Image 1 (cartoon, rainbow, N blue to C red):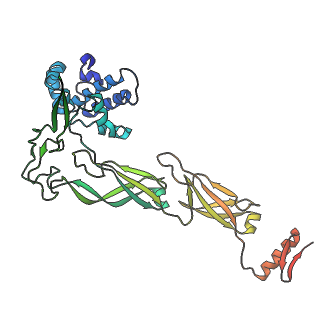
Image 2 (cartoon, rainbow, N blue to C red):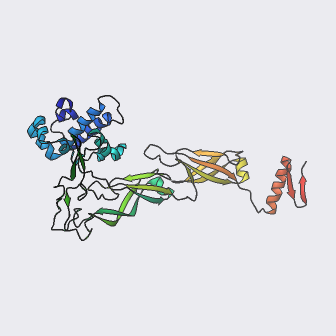
Image 3 (cartoon, rainbow, N blue to C red):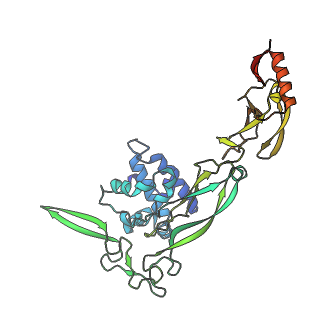
Length: 376
């Protein structure tokens, strides 16, 4: 690394900085100099430098050694391979979309694929789960208890894979390094290839007496009850993420996430479009023609609505702020009341006579007891 600067200086943190402060400082700088984002000539070297600083200062043992020895003596005792061993870079950037390619990225930056920065801890798989909710639940928010089948770390052996009372043993093939080195000759040149030990899968140890509960696999299948908080305003297709509630990892990595997909059940009164609610209101033609005061349902109970005279079929009246809460925002949508003119199917004799008188007054053709006739 150019300059051999102090690791604390590289990350811009004080010497008594907490692990969270170190992680936050590294994330900020790494996103700034990540080769996929920054094409400046020195970006790659800066990224290597801050990654090396984080690899040391994020590990309690390495940090203690560094504080005691200083940069120069520390570098003599720790190789670059030792510095980066077992450092979990993926979790730092998973939410930013860089988590899955860190192994390839570090391999390319530190030796074109031959560099192994330590045992790669593969994260557990994510789980998708679908939940049906009512419009009332989406309006107010609710807690849903779901039962999710997933893999979990074995509680009997605490995820070691070894029978209680026994311990995993150092892998005899790689002597606990998790790696195998093969030296090949080509003329006067020698090439060293580093790969993951197939006997221990890069973990450095093997289980001789497996746990009876998990059979040495370290994980077991369980159905877990999980309470999901559904926030107000969720809509069809909304996705909620529960971090760490997914599948366990077989490689010692972090647990995957649980993604909840929301499906909306139909409502007896309302049709939803975004944050707005639509309600169809049936009116008699006398109410539409003369105007009326009516009550309409909302998500919070009935309210009065004034119907203007001369209202036409399909006309929409707005109840401001009576719609759905805005998800992760402020305020609410509107309730839109669409007018539908309801024509009676059965009339009394008196009602027929009144309508005939109205038709005569308005000069309209109507059907009488003796067929169609026109008032003039």
